[in-house]
Length: 630
Image 1 (cartoon, rainbow, N blue to C red):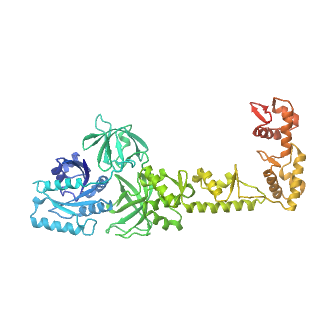
Image 2: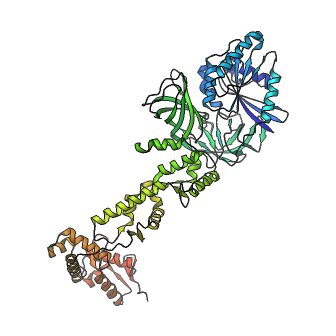
């Protein structure tokens, strides 16, 4: 069965609700106050089923005080009926609703001139010309126009037939593989049915039994049952109205503006980048920005709007702006939005989300970054990868920001990698410029390290990672070190790194001093002096001695134990051999201290060293001697 979602728009009391009642037999005014006052205050819903097609209708309030309610129901509309009363013509809310329809990018608009019974043909013709003049500068200059009298029935059947024919032509793909997104525009709890929510399914597919995330809020809900226009369905796809009966959630936790999301759907955010157009009668937006009400999906959130390119947006102009929402909301790239002035209330403009999780780059990169995000989706992905630097991006993040399924995100990343616009490293992708910058930084850090410690054979891997990579990128350190090794910048040996072919060469004087240092430690046995004491004994500079000690440790002629104690490697080897030759199976610390005439200062670090080498094994307060391997 073909389906079409139609919305109404227009000034208050121009007959929108009466028109839908004549078309469908359904009164969209459901609230007692609406009945009493005779005007629509909130969203209303109706449907028409005829000749194998289903047409859903969203009736929005026309009063200027309830534009915020109207905005909550216009998402997903494929065809808008701009209703103009023949006895009043174009009025302020006619103009505002028309401007909102353009800002939201509604694909198609028809004009319906109502209340023909209240005027003669000549006046009706004049109103038609007035509306045509209004539409001349919009995206619908040739919009179809129909005339009706809902009370007498004139033209109602012609409108219904035209809508049915239009519904047959609806060919929008529901994209069932995309993550489900249902902006909630109503939530209530009928007696005995739990929580029921309604909305226009913006993307994906929802079936009975599905587990959905409720955002913002972070809760989950199970779909117990679903209906479309009062009929139970097993599943629904994007593009139409749906009512869901939910389990696992309380009514107090659900409100208009939240979204029900399938796996992989976008999450809550506050910082967005957008392409925005101001209306001709909007006040100019200065560089410092303005406080606005942001309407996106069914949500209405206070936000700070700040122009970026250009820095000042005059009325009627278009540019790129940052939006900082005061409360979390759900958004994806491509979502349409409207911004309004809070007081006095007025529509300022609107546009399209370019980045739902925007991070401002450095000032020197801002213009290029904005240009990429304002281009196509592939350019945006490449820009996100560049902004992420060494942290890179993965399929889940791309899907989150684009609002697409993981398969589509993975395919786009693979295509960009195949074109050389991204570098693939397992599940993550990186901008080539980010890896080039990382390579230059690694080269500089290695040069600085070995310039400061000329005798070092290598650099601790952990130190290089800490200095080279920001914290959020350190989880991918092994990948980056492998790439740097493949580029010939370094060699990784266990927990150390060094430039290829790195050899620390001693000068003639250093060779002699190193020999003297080694002689001192080999002669000191198991109670060696500190490097500072050695420097005093040999009347050498402490920094030079420390450098030579590190050199001898790297050559395994000396060993530095935890706590900074330095021993001759030969002394430690002799200790291990002697301990195994004692014939002991187990021994206590006191026995060890007595045999080698050691204080606790030396005994404990030595025993821990022997444990680490596998010479001994700690068993409670004693040690067991491990036989030497053959």
